[in-house]
Amino acid sequence: MTKQKLLIVDDEAPLREMLSDYLLMHGFDVRSVADGAGMHTELDGFNPDLVILDVNLVGERGYDLAREIAKQSRAGILMLTAVGDLPHRLEGLAAGADDYMAKPFEPRELLARVRSVIRRLGEEERKPEHRIRFGGCVLDINGRTMVDPDGADVQLTSMEFDLLCVFARHPRQILSRDQLCRLAHNRDLEPGDRSIDIRITRLRKKFETEPDAPVVLVTVRGEGYVYEPAYDEARRR
Image (tube, rainbow, N blue to C red):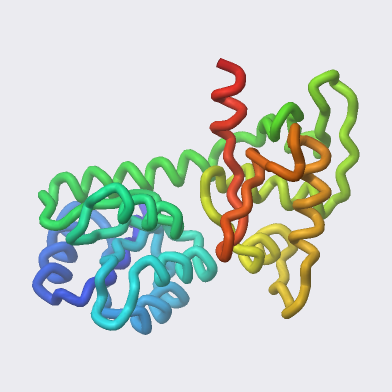
């Protein structure tokens, strides 16, 4: 059975050594680095399933590194920080973290969270394609169709469909225009290219109740867009 791979990014050598030994003892393949440069090298060569990332690296912001992980890898992210209040947790989750732990922590809890994140990510990858709500409309990923509340077909271009599939796979996660272009269309976004914004504007007109005040595909100023499925869940209750 292939071991799940963990990458620890922390500038505290004793903590790296302790975590590496503990997680190796529990059956993981573990590597550790002290900074972002080492992280990028291991993302390419080691290809971890999960990155355990310290927020407060010397001279670097873990939140920025988390965003870089999301661009470079499909690895999950568990962030470590000396500050565990809500604003910091929200910033970590907005940067793409799957979970968040405040230091100091009990190694057994870290192990449980590592296993939980890896299990959750694995379940998401194995999920059969299904029907996803966007506003009052339903996207059928298997059938590559969308219907409105009356059951009538909503016309989608292939690029609009691919973009919705990316949002469906990353609910509540802020995705930059570069990420959306790479994930949906398998290419980098060129300078001045506004195609992602244009497609999102068109999509909003197809399923947002008020396209000029969107609540499903929401703009996060300076960062990108986020799909908010909770809006539909709350509206149906």
